[in-house]
Length: 280
Image (tube, rainbow, N blue to C red; front, side, top):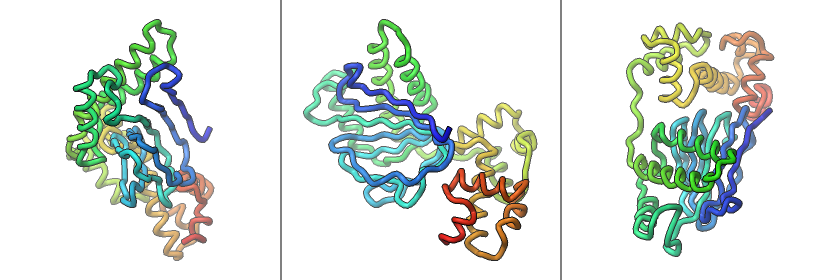
C-alpha cells in the first residue's frame, strides 16, 4: 500500500463553510504536488510525521512533523520541483470571510474575531500543540461512529480546533533540548553507521520508550527514519560527485546490499540511485 487517505466532506453532514478535512499517509515519496489555488478559501496543513517542502506564492517553506502551515485565500501553492515525501499529514480547506456571520459554534462577534485572527497571522508556519492532533483524531473517530449526537460533537470539536489554532499561531519555533541534540549531533557525525535504538537512547540518557516519544515530538521523525534520511541526503551528494559506484556508496553508508540501498533511496526520492545519478 503506497498511501492511506481519509476525508470528511462537511457538506454531507450539513456543516457549512468547511469543504474538507483530510488525512493522508504517504508510505513512500510521490511525484510533486502541482500548482493550484483555493478560491476564497484557507488551507491549513498539520504535518504529523516526516517533512515536506512547499512553495507558496513563490516562497519556499520546509515543514517537519509537528508543524502547521497556513495558505491564505487565493494563494498559489505546490511542492515545486520537490516530490511529496514519505510523511503523514492532515489538511483542512475552509471558507471564512466578511459575508459569513456565524462559523461553527461561534457567534457573530467571535466569528469576526476568528477571521481577523487568521488574517493577522504573522508567521504562516508555527509549531502545533499536542492537543491539535488529539482533536483531529477525535473528529475522524466521531465521524465514523453512529453516535446520535455525531454531528453536534463534530461541530464542537471543530470549534475547539480553531480555538487551538489561534492560540498556537503565535508560538515560537521549538528549541531542541540537549538530550535530543546529542543524538542528532551523533547521527550527523556518523551517517555511515547503523545503531540500535537502545544505543541512541543511552546517548540521550533516556529510557527507550521516552526516547522514541521525545525524539519524534522534537524532530517529527522516528529515530531510525531520521537516520535513514541523513543517509539519503549524503547519498545524493555522493551520487552527484560521480566518484564512487552505486555499490560502493551503498556499503559506505551501511546498507546491507545495493538492492536495499536502492529500495530505501527510491522510497524517499521517487528515483533509483541510477536514475538520480543520470539526472544530476
